[in-house]
Every structure is written in C-alpha cells, then in structure tokens.
Image 1 (cartoon, rainbow, N blue to C red):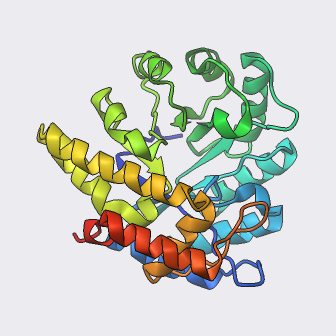
Image 2: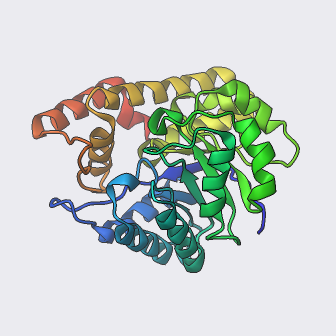
Amino acid sequence: MTKLSLKGLVAAAHTPFAADGSLNLGIVEKQAKHLLQNGISVAFIAGSTGESHSLNVEERRRLAVRWLEVARGTPLKVIVHVGSNCLTDARALAAHAQQIGALAVAALAPNYFKPRSIAGLIDCCAEIAAGAPELPFYFYDIPAMTGVSLPMPEFLAQGKERIPNLNGIKWTNPDLYNYQLCRNMAGAFDLPWGNDEYLLAALALGAQGAVGSTYNFAAPVYQRLLKAFAVGDLDAARQEQFCSVRIVQTLSNYGYMGAAKTVMTMLGVDVGPARLPNANLAEAQATALRQDLDRIGFFDWLKQ
C-alpha cells in the first residue's frame, strides 16, 4: 500500500437522484466535469454529503462504478466511503472499491451499536480495512453525526499495529487540540480537514488537504483562500473564510442538505432531491434561497 497525502480541496460529492428518488447516475459525468473545471481533482463519494446511509449496498456499488468509469482517462481520482452499521457490508464495499480502482477508502464508525473504546473502534476499522488491503484506509471521524467521540491520538497510535493500510483520518471534528497531537505523531498520518467553515484555522496548524461539501459549489472561494494563505495574506484569507461562513449559515437556514442540492441545480448540475429523512425545499423556499444568496454576494464570489 502506497501512502497517500491529500493536498488542496477534495469535494465530498452529492449522490444524484431523479425526481422519484431513484439513482440518477447520468448526472455523475456532469458532476465530475464541474469539479475539474473548478480545480478539484479528487472526489469523495458516498459519504455524509453523498447520503450514504440512505443508500442500499447495491446502489453504493453502482454509484462507485459510475464515478470510476467517468474518472477513467481524466485527472479525477475517487475516494469511496464504505462505512456502514453492518461491518460485513462495509468490508464488501471496501473490497469492491479496491477492485474497481479507487484511490482510497474511508469509513465512519458504526453508530447504532457504537464502539465504546479505542480497542472496539480499532476492531471495527480493522475488519473494514482488511477488505481493501492494497488501498489507503482513512477513519472518518465525525462525532457530531455518529455520536462516537474517542481520542484520535490513541486510535492512530494503537491502530497502526492492527491496520497495516491505516493512512490517516478524515477529520470532520472541531477538536483542534487533538488534531495537533495527531499531526505531530510519528508515522506521518494524513489528516485531511473536514470542516469547511474554519479551514483557515486548520491551515494555520499545518493542514495540507481538505474534504468538504461546499467545495462542490463554492470552490473558487476556497481556492482563493488557499492562495492567500500560501503567500501570507491573512487578511484576504480571513475574508474568503468569512464568505464560507456566510454560505454555510445561509444554507443551514433552509436545511443544509436540501439547500446545498438546490444550489447545485442553480449552477447547472442537477443532482436532484435529497432522500428522506433529509428534507427538500419547496419552490418558494428555493426562490427565497436564491434571493438570500444574491444578497450576500454568493454568485459574484464564484467568479474565477
């Protein structure tokens, strides 16, 4: 297994649905083209933004196959999230991702029957990662969604003995204290940042890569942020980060998932509705959202 170090922006892609809620895989090509046009060369599929827990196993396999088909022959690489409450399914999805040529796999913790200790979490991750021994494996730490909040420095220190292909953590966790401890551990683990609305804080602490949902539709904001930070222009970087905060705040006022998918449609990439239990916007709400986005300057911010 070759070590992987993600750099720059990785888009956590939406899963496209038709109006009746079925998969609409014909849109994936347009999603991929949109990402590449906005300077993004890695997609993270079937994660939280991809509504993975609302997909069955066969849908997740078909989604992964389509993304890999579309990416073939282009600069785009694909990371497949395979986490599930059923470890047998997660391991099978990992094996499938390796078979079709994914760049890496990731998995969040089981979150109905939850691992209560580091040892329990490592057992779960070792089972999943063993399905794709040739691919880098990322634990997807997102305690706000899973309810699993365990010390990640201990996970990395102990996990590397049990999980040979443990590459790092997709860090969707506001815990910058433990983020620093993990960044400075022996073993050079990769820790892509997963909180779009304070990417700048993570960059200041050494983050190199970031995986996020808003990179689907607001990549220019973050590309400017990265460039400003790289040249030491913190005032400009802070300004772009605050644009991010205003975007997230605006979408959250309408229900984030449904609003985010509505924005994609506004940009010409119709990824369709969200699946229950996520809610969608009524026509009047979509109109109001566009007005709010105009008011804060969102569409001007997308100009390259």
